[in-house]
Length: 44
Image (tube, rainbow, N blue to C red; front, top):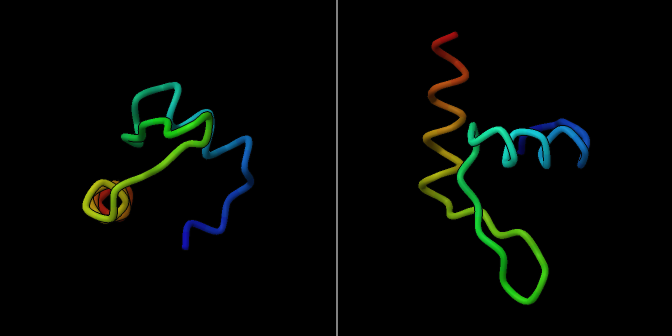
């Protein structure tokens, strides 16, 4: 997966760099949003 800490993932979500949504208080990330983030981060 991302191999980053949970606080880092939360920061990415809060900063809008990683799309996510909450279900019953837990963050969820769609597969296509994860793949888009990975692809975008590889281009940096």
